[in-house]
Each structure stands twice: as C-alpha cells, then as structure tokens.
Amino acid sequence: MKIITKNIFLFTFVFVLAVSGCTGGAKLVPAGGTVTQNGKPLSDVRLEFRQPDTGTSAFAETDVDGKFVLTHSQGGTGAVAGKYIVSIFQKGKPIPLPTGINAEDLPEERRNPMSPEIEIRNSDNSNIEIEIPETGNNNLKIEVK
Image (cartoon, one colour):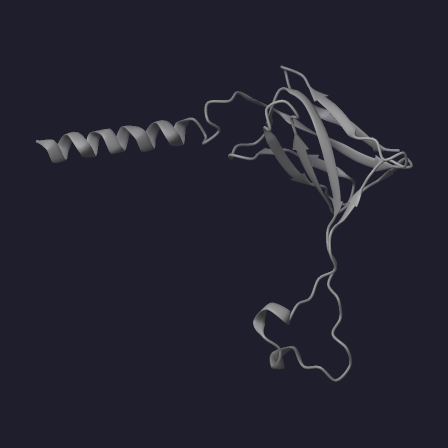
C-alpha cells in the first residue's frame, strides 16, 4: 500500500509541475516585438530581459527583421508583467581556420572557433528599459540609441 501511495504522490507532483509550465506558478503574458538601432532592425541578436527587483528573466533571439518573442527562463512562451532591463548581445560569428590547418586534426572543442559575443548598449551607456503590461504586448519597440 505504501508503494501505491508514493506513486500517486509522485504522479501528482509531476502532473502539477507539467501543468504549471515549470514557471513556478508565475503568470506569463504574451511578450514580443522589434529591436532597432538607428531605425534599422537588429537581426540575429540575443536578448536578455531581467527584472531588477525580482531577478525574473526571459530570453529571445531576433530574426532578420529584428522581431522577437520572449520565452520565460523557467519555460513557457511570454514573460511575467513588469519592468525589465534589457541586455542585447551580438552573437559570436564563426572564425575561419588559418590556411593549411585541417579541422579534423584539432581537438573537438577547437574545431569550430567563434568570436565572443559583444554587448550592444546605448551610446551613453545607459540601461535599456522596458515595461511589459499586465495584458501583455506583442508589439514592444526597443530602440538602441
């Protein structure tokens, strides 16, 4: 009987975790939009949204048109409503190997070298801030100045 009780408890725990979307019970709202710099879309960048008071975070990558959709750090599409500081990173690019070096002769971790990510900031080095309303917003506009 004890085994059945443990199995029921385990099943209930897994079910509740799955239904909650692994977000710790946080209510997610739709969140996405466009990132631009000097009026032009920022494509192929990585975004990190972090609430300074709670540490809650969400992430996204932009497409060729600078558009993005946020994903909560604990799973689920969207973000928790509130104020965020946004960090933007230009993703690393592949670095070609020098002439005469065969990738197969290198250790696995050195076969596909990448340049480091570069953080994109406002010209005055100020934080990029945005607020996601309680109703959500799929038309957020982030302009890097």
